[in-house]
Image (cartoon, rainbow, N blue to C red; front, side, top):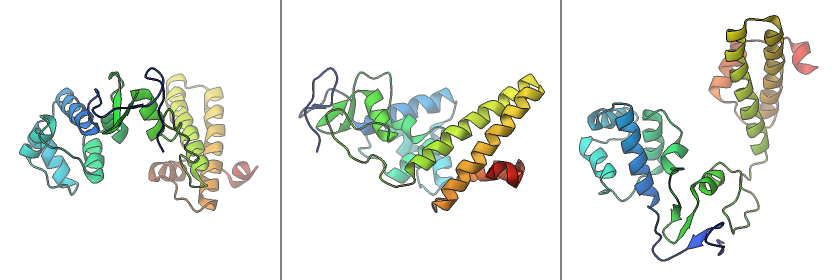
Length: 209
């Protein structure tokens, strides 16, 4: 249950929060991202329709002008994918002073982002299991190693030296081990990681060592 906390550091309860609603934030983020990318409302609607969300230009306009009171989860995912961002980029605006979690509760945007990422409970709450699946830590570990490998790939291309290639090889070994642990736990490895490992095989004795 959500609890009360200080107005400066915690989650605040109010009948009418001063911050925008979640849908308002999504609308603002969609509008700004669309314009920044030079995508018309009609084109965005076409992209959503291509993803199985039957929107037209008027639907985009209604969302962006505050005349659409809700966004479904599939719509959120399709909007994010069409605009080439994470769904979190549509749900959280870090420039805002506060974010509405639901109608009677608001918190800081950074705290909301942490909660959505499964890193921290909302301030003033006592969530015991943010990501209750037993393999959640394995998924997080794989994400960290995957980010390291991608960074090392770019660094190796820029440096072109043997030492960086060796470091990248060791990172690929860690990536393969992390993926193997996920497979053992019965959790599917993300497609981009599986494809990368197929393209960059590691000797079995190295991966098992």
